[in-house]
Image 1: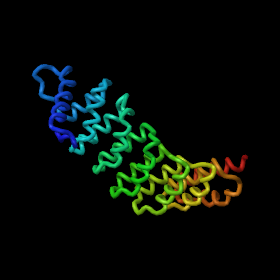
Image 2 (image 1 turned 180 degrees about the vertical axis):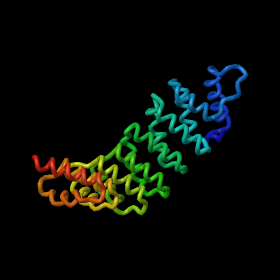
Image 3 (image 1 turned 30 degrees about the horizontal axis):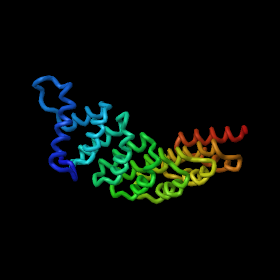
Image 4 (image 1 turned 60 degrees about the horizontal axis):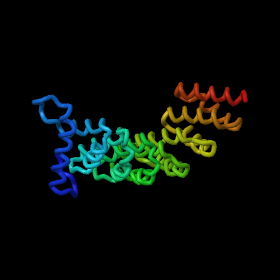
Length: 238
C-alpha cells in the first residue's frame, strides 16, 4: 500500500487500521486480510463520515492506481460531492489514469466548476486524456467552447481526437453554429460526418441549402445519400 503523502506515520497507521476495522465487521473469521482495492470498494458503499474521510485519504496515496480507484469511488459515493475539491485537484494529478478518472467524475456530476481545469487538459500529451477531456467538456459545455472545439476538429493530427471533437460539436450545435459545422462536415472524408451535415441541414436550414444537399444525395455512401434525400424531402415540404 502506498504511504499517504504529507502525512505522519501515526496518521498513516490510524488510516490503515480504520480501513481494516471498517471491512472486518463484515468479514468472516479467519478470512484473508482485504486488499487495499477491496477496502476502497467497501468504503464506496459506506455512507458514514469516516468512510468518506478514508476515501479522501486514499486519493492522496503514492500508488497511482489506488488514487485512481479512490477517485472513482468518490465519484460513485452518495456523498461524494462533499469531496468536490478532491476531484478538482485530481484533474492536475501526475498520473494520466487518475486524470481521466477525475474527468469521468466531472462528466457524471456535470461539475461546472471544473470547466477551466478540463480545458487545460486539451493540451495534455496523452491522446487518450485529450479525448476524455473533450468528452467531458461536452457535459459542462459553455457557448464559448465552440471555437476552441472546432479548431481541434480542424487541426488535430490524430483522427480519433478529431472524431471526438466532431461528436461533441454535433451534440452541442445551435442555430448560430450549425452552418459552420455543415460546411465542414459536408466535405469531410468520414462518411458519418457527411451524414451529420445532412441531418443538420434538415433541422436548421432553409431552401438555400438544397443545391448542396442535392450533391450529397449522390454521395458514394448509402447512409449519406439517404440522409440527404430525407433532408431534401423535409425542406421541400416546409
